[in-house]
Length: 183
Image (cartoon, rainbow, N blue to C red; front, side, top):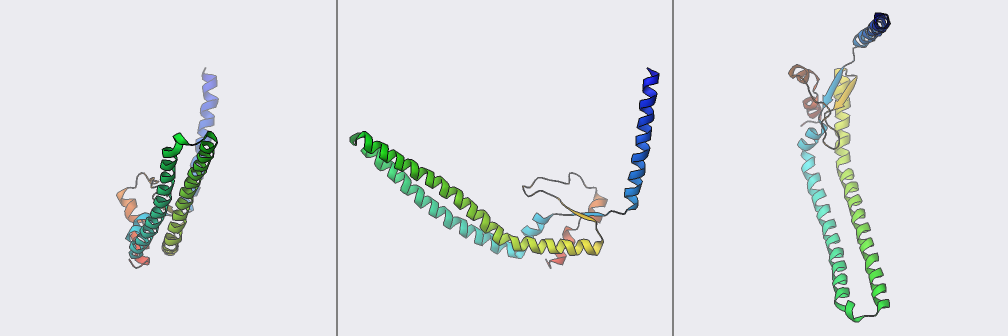
């Protein structure tokens, strides 16, 4: 039993020694990492209010278009239901096919509207994100940072789960990026 443990223990010590060496090399490379919260910056940008209003207006007009088409479809369904009992089987089948086609077109139109809204959002917010990206690059270069991390994903999921108070003061460049943007 001891004969089996000694070689395994030796391997662990050997691997541990190599991993400490590589860790020391990484420390000597002076990698510096900062982090930023672009969503916080974006929400504080003065231009964002105008962008939100334009996007809201665009979405409202698209909702009205969709509601009109949906109302037209529901009216056609109601008309069919009213005359369903007095029309022939052939006419029923044709009408149901036509209503099925209209329903499919309505769903396709809804998907198209969602894509248009996303495209409009990217069109309006994109230039602001470009400004933020440029400011991040400027601050990172001024501070000599090797990497800058985003604090959250695009879905709002947190990436940095813990940052000490000392590290936050030293590595959070959000305020500096806002200064770079004259905010």
